[in-house]
Length: 443
Image 1 (tube, rainbow, N blue to C red):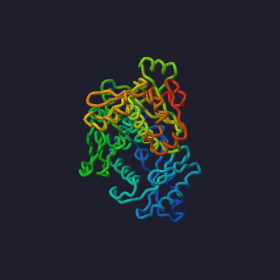
Image 2 (cartoon, one colour; image 1 turned 90 degrees about the vertical axis):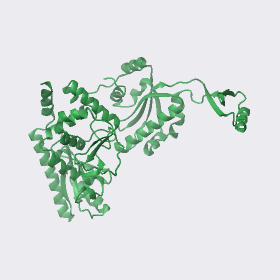
Image 3 (tube, rainbow, N blue to C red; image 1 turned 180 degrees about the vertical axis):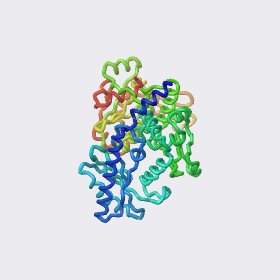
């Protein structure tokens, strides 16, 4: 069958070679040995463990990420965990960067691998976690004891999700995490059975592998997958409705016409100026782009602020009678952009200003005195006045800083922003052309 040959080819391309797997495992053991030795030398009651997909043998060929957790006794004061954890983590490599989640951790380069070194509390069970990262060792243990030889099936699902653009739980993507993909394989038993089930996923679906969901906790997210190690937690909490239904659509398309391209799509070609001009002319719309310097914050902080700003700008435009057809946010780490495809971007020079109902005699008389040209419009007075902002770009320039923008995005915009029109959006920075092709759904 064609599906079998596609899956065989895909599996062969995503499974690490024996040499690649051995190299990674040996490197992880070496890092753990360095940390444990340094902890013993310093007299710290700490040991390191290897977690994540590379520890669970569900990682994809070519990925060079290793997650090492530094396990501190649960009674350790947070400040001590932070100081000793960072001290141990820095000892692994001179090439590192300090990052922040719930508490600081180190992201290092070691022998060509990207290594995250994360201090956590070695709690006895997941119900006693003191920080969100404390769950990861329990996730590790659960998958290792329940994957039952389905590692390659998990790899297929991850690559499929990656290929159709729904993989990654970071807030830039709002898609499926690796752990979530593994749980779906554990629940449904194979890649094909997961695709069969996924074709019928719907908003509000509950997947509870351990049948232990806490009924007292409400989950408003579109898909609810109860964490096997924590009955209160939804593993799919970061998944957006958009990405859920993109996955549903992809599953249905694969069922109808399985293709290797769904696992390994060709690179997205950037839209160039002639093509973008043709698209805009054909559609009869206008692109307006707000661009500004990217604030120096991590993506998981940046993208919620960008989306908040996007929603606020769209509300402002529509409150002033402009019409946005679609919008999106983008950043390449240097510049940010809020891109708006406008259906209505220019309005007449007048607008109707509504006054009080005529039944409210006192207020109505004052309105009539203030506006001698007022007229009766239904049950109330109205008057035609000059429109303050006949063009959408004028409104944005004048009122953008009054929108809800998020702290760091607001600070960046207040320093400087530019409003671009039409194909000038292509000047924003590297990567914007690929983003525009996907935003405008031009394959």
